[in-house]
Length: 301
Image (cartoon, rainbow, N blue to C red; front, side, top):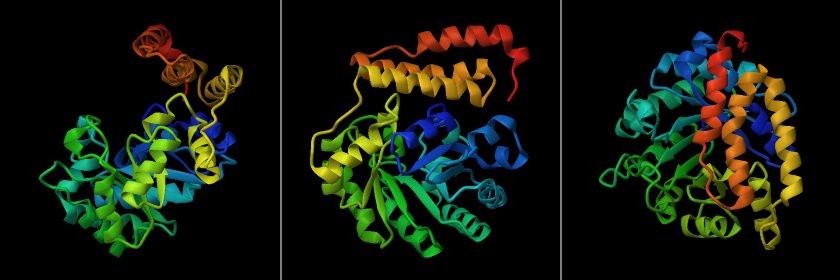
């Protein structure tokens, strides 16, 4: 969700009724050192109903320092990411790579918990690959350390986003712990949310890629689940107004050119959701990047 769930996006989702929104993944070492773009990712903003900062890293010292900094910045919850499958993340032995070293993962969890008074939650995958489906063990260790909730994406790291999420496999995690378990992966509407809950036995669902261009989707699914009515999404004109407000917030939150860059992929997602046909993100990104190269000296963050 890097480049998607920035502060303007989270404000838009909150205005539309989302009860829980998390920051983009924040690299602990860069956050602790104050790197401007990473600090911007950790911005919690004002007026959000629940402020969640998601941290990623593999160094006990940086994890602890970043958890303390997140609390000082106003986070209500600190979420540890041990599920990201991206090569640049796992190549640094972070994200889902930590599912190959549960002892280190447990030390990192304990470090975060000991460094903050805020609740610490954990996000993971089913395991590194199909031969090491160790999510139940990591979940049990995390609960003993003091984690308050666990989110599980129903794929292994080696699957990336291929095939279908295995919601039934998440049931083993639910059976291993007493804290709330949240199921994630391939949940795009009310029917997939209902099926994921039924097959996993989880307490809640988390929406990831399906919220791209649809900041309203989480509250819309929640209403459908609560009322047992069909999923209702905004019409074309309402979506346009949402997009315009989001764009204005993106430009106001950063330098205008940087705001345009941040909004480019969001706009592609909104267009895809509106028209129902794939739209390449390369075009708006390429045009925006070309403009940014001409004006990069005027950036301010």
